[in-house]
Image (cartoon, rainbow, N blue to C red):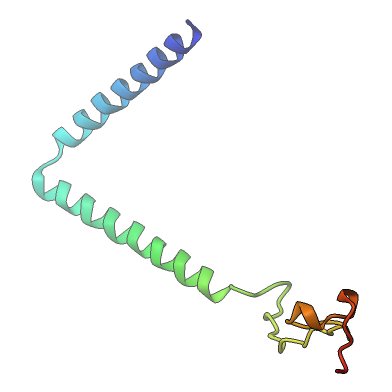
Length: 97
């Protein structure tokens, strides 16, 4: 029952906003409407490009430092490491045959 009330309120707000927007857009001429659309397009497009470039530029920056790349270090292997399970000391065979 409570969700129906919420849906009803949401639909009322959507209808109100839709009516208001239609009235506002219906009052302006097609030339002005095109100008508004183009201004909004360039504004939001420029904002999108700025955010993208800014994000790419700031990748790896932390506290004013750039990310430092290090070489991969070799993992230390144990003496008993072997890819052949029969060559392992725990199976009763020596590695020195």
